[in-house]
Image 1 (cartoon, one colour):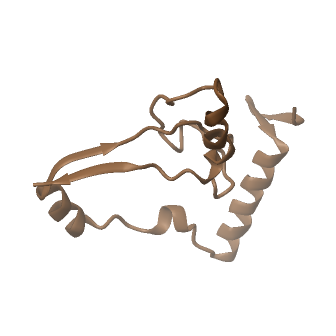
Image 2: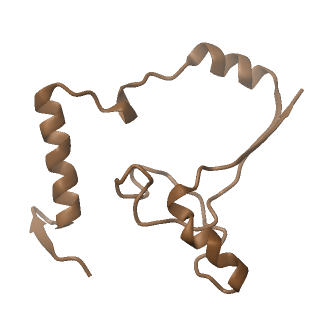
Length: 112
């Protein structure tokens, strides 16, 4: 288990504090956060939704503690549907657990 400290009423791990410090330094240096600074493409999105018959986003098989970008994969920042599996029950499932950090959500799309 990682050591944690209390800031206000929230328990923070060392990793959380390092992430917050990095964010603050980037902000002070004027470095934009690529995750929040890119506006949505409303024109292409409208065209896409007009031409889709089916759009289905599969839930993750497993969920890692952190995303592939290193930030916490929590429900507040990454709204996540119910996982397909909570633990490895059969040998063939282990690869999905091992590669959960590299997981990119898969989608099924059918055009009209």
